[in-house]
Length: 216
Image (cartoon, rainbow, N blue to C red; front, side, top):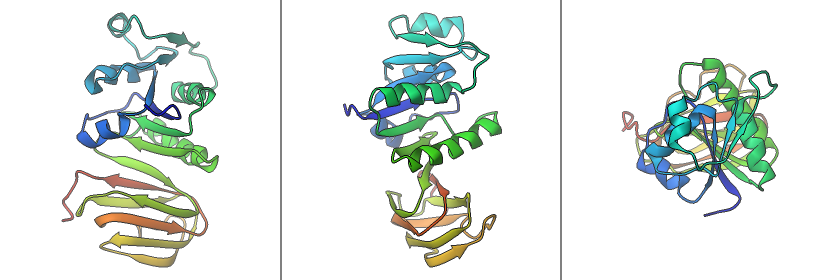
């Protein structure tokens, strides 16, 4: 187990894929409210369970009596996920995986998770979001390498105007590209294997579907 790598169990959908289980294997785990329901599915016992527990049934609480719980009042200024992140950071976290942070019934929560991940990445943390079938990784100035299978789909969502964007290892490569804010130019690309992204300025998120090989 890596003391500085943490997984935050969130309330969105989560599929126990081999890729997901491999990523979570050597991490410490903190559950945020209803995200605790994923613990049994992925076979992991969190060291801490936080939140206001408004999304947690009495049956779920009874199923995990030995996991330390830290309850918070519903009228609070942070989401349960943010509380879990603060707990991880206080324990020395340098990398974070948000499992169950994509999709679900609340688009506002899913979008906020993406923005929050970028903000955390700007502080120097390694951040990754996953549903097991879909993944998101912040893209900031510098280089990002993603291990994707040939034929898997990915998109870049620019949160700013992007300058100096390069994509290598994809069906539709780019070199030192200017991407205006709001452009759809980087939607639905196809990996030819591992993909390298380079960015000079701006902020973005790379969304990938590693098991979706419809582009092959």
